[in-house]
Image 1 (cartoon, rainbow, N blue to C red):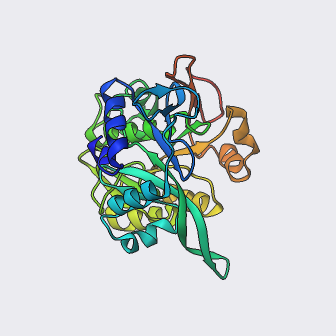
Image 2: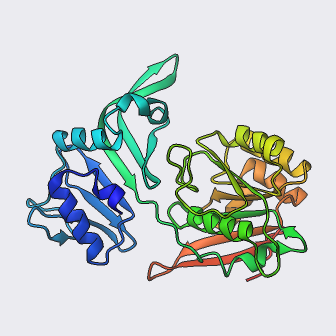
Length: 312
């Protein structure tokens, strides 16, 4: 995690390094001017005190993120050129070396109802890019059919691990499984979370037969990859807009298999989503994988067929 540690102010570098050395696995760092630095992992949220301790509750001795801390950190994150990040920042986030995604909030500069950029950045959300290889090994056998995969949606509430699961499915299908030779996979990585691209180069291992289109809108990216890279499988994170649904239908009619994710709180919500209910009627998708967090932070999964009958 040296890429993250290196962008922090001196005092926080030591606190951050100590946390990793103590075996903690931070997933997010919430940095807000004038507020305590908040760290989140699977156990919940915690804070750093100025004497180097980790505490569960915010107290008077917590490390307070200052305006100077923000300026120093943004300078390092941008390699001293915030102008170079403006295109990404207008989307609300940018990616630093190592593939770690940094969400931003502050004053939006708008023109004709569209965001041009974000100034006076007040808070950052640093999301740690951590690939969990092997997490999809028990899921993949349920998705594979003769010569290909079933059209599949991975579903979960926010934060339950569907992007992590999708990332490992892509890697395994690209490299090949005992039942399926390696497949050409096209990935539309709109938010740079799957491949964790930095300067266009994937930082995560998505397999040797995978082509990634980074920071591109999903619908446009799916059409482009079908035309240019002839993938057997199209993988895309967080389907949701009408344009996404139309692009998926086009890809299906071109013979591609779809591997995607979607936010749902419970499996029954699928019938309540306007476009997806139409897909259910026509059985476009043949597998649904629903993820839920266990009591000890582990991820559980259930698999359903195209009629939403539970398979496991």
